[in-house]
Image (cartoon, rainbow, N blue to C red):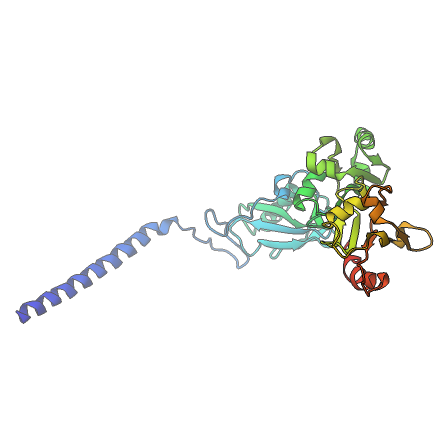
Length: 363
């Protein structure tokens, strides 16, 4: 019995070895059959690079620039992504120098890039590769990575302020969408300061229409940005040009401090909103039991008054009982309601809480 088992194991080992040899033979045979499909490099000088038809890294993803290649004009200091299909030695980022040129490895002459569209630059690079006998049938794709000149500066009360490249036809609402919208403290006004390209690019009809829908001058335009963002009002959606600057103004903030349930700063939803003492107290969660409303004070910022800041005493008790008119608060006002028996003075509260925290709201 043991002899039979030993013979059986030997047969099994031989069978497995045979299958292994057959598997390797089949694999080598398949690879040999596929070999003619692989591109063979043509003989030539060390400088020659053969085009690859079906291999190599994937082409760069489409960008707004690649979709508007005929309208985008390359400028000095642009950062370009040049992709030569199947040739990783040439495919990388290139910076356009101060003379408007880019230099590619293995290419004898620098290529003039500034002033060309992306498609024209791709054809110019292809020509240099053909004229230098570097490639036999090059396929070149050019996209824009970043551009200093062809950009718009967006600042102020937006979620992602910064420098945004302009690739062809771009509208204000599209730019705000790229910036992920308005911030919570955004005001209702956006100020567009036009660059030289805008003054040249706009037609007389466009300038007239712009003046009809917004407060316009040759250089600045004011737009009701809240109406545009909330309602998508097409009449307010202005075209942007490279070199323009867009500033979304911050809305005002009113501060309520002291004997209230929820002290802090409260943002005006837009520049037209009127904030009153009663509304501010309601936003602050009403008064505490220890409040002394008859001794309330409005601290007015120096920027809102002439001759420096001032204190405006108010009798909040009379206002709450409707025996005195409600007071209008201005942006950056501080409504302070003292506590009964509080040892801290008004100025110590303002110094400790406002000037170290609330007053320094980032604008």
